[in-house]
Every structure is written in C-alpha cells, then in structure tokens.
Length: 86
Image (cartoon, rainbow, N blue to C red):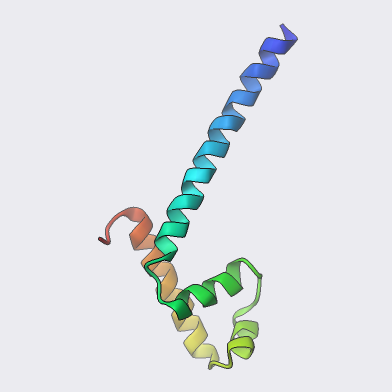
C-alpha cells in the first residue's frame, strides 16, 4: 500500500513539472516579441535581481527610461501571454 501511495503523490508533481515547463516555454516565446532593450531590462530585473536604479546604472540610461521600458515590456508580455496580441 505504501508504494501505491508514493505513486499517487508523485503524479501531481509530474503534472506540475509539465505545466511549469509549458509555462516557461510560453514566457520564452513571448519574450521574443520584446525589443532588445526591453528584454535586456527585464532579464536584469527578474533573472539577475537588480533594482531599477542598478539597471539604470549598468545600462547608463536614465532611471525613468528604465522604469518605462520595464513597464511597457511587462504590459506587452501580459497581452502576449493572454493571447490578445498576434
């Protein structure tokens, strides 16, 4: 009985992993619609964990430009992932 219970609890994990992989693929595809500068800013913020100020300094861009670029990129990703942009 213990082996069966282990099998039951591992199944949702497999489903969750597949769903996460599919979501990662969707996000990567959606990122391709962004401009290079939008994508770079998002990657610095979300993958490297930099603050807007740190991104501004690294890219030598005004803080307002970085904030605007990230906001625009996030809105574009949202629309892309919702399927409202073609």
